[in-house]
Image (cartoon, rainbow over all chains, first blue to last red; front, side, top):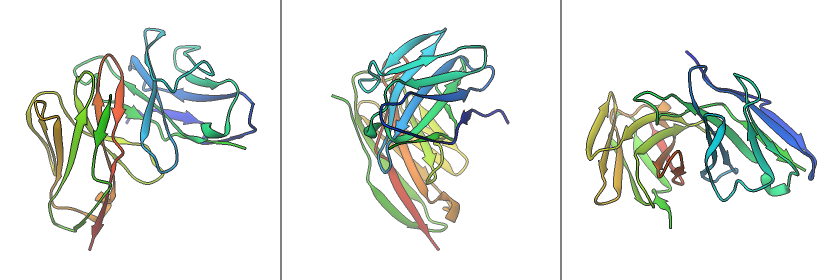
Length: 115
Length: 109
């Protein structure tokens, strides 16, 4: 069964450093998303991406965040200068364009620890 | 403002039926979703409602009333493996999604 894959599973970084979280969405999907979940808290929407541009973004997705689809398979989230409060699980998701457009399939997540 | 409410925790017995409620107040509504999330894992899709009424999918059913801003997820014939968090999420405008805080369900033998 096709799945969304994320790498790395765990990323440890120093405050102020840049990190890139990588995702390979399901191959025929056209909508891509990033979410974060701080430990013990709810899943929070960050950004959605379609047709090589951002569709929607939340207030959390400020200038330190950026997304990119550098080739036909990868979808990345970059955090320019990490802060302690960026420590969270980051989930990538994708959905198709047909009737099931709204059903998002999530990757296993990348746990980001900022020290 | 945008707000989704769910009970924090629920407990039920194996084999029983449980109903998890969700109320929402959002600017825009384009569908309500239920996801299951086991501890330390990714959310997995369970059910989706965009029109009022009941959607049934095996042991899981979900109901929506748009006029009341209300949904519930019904789990029948509970199994131990159903112990997880259940997340209610609303698609607002475009491709923007808001998740509720989740309901942690414990299924006891």
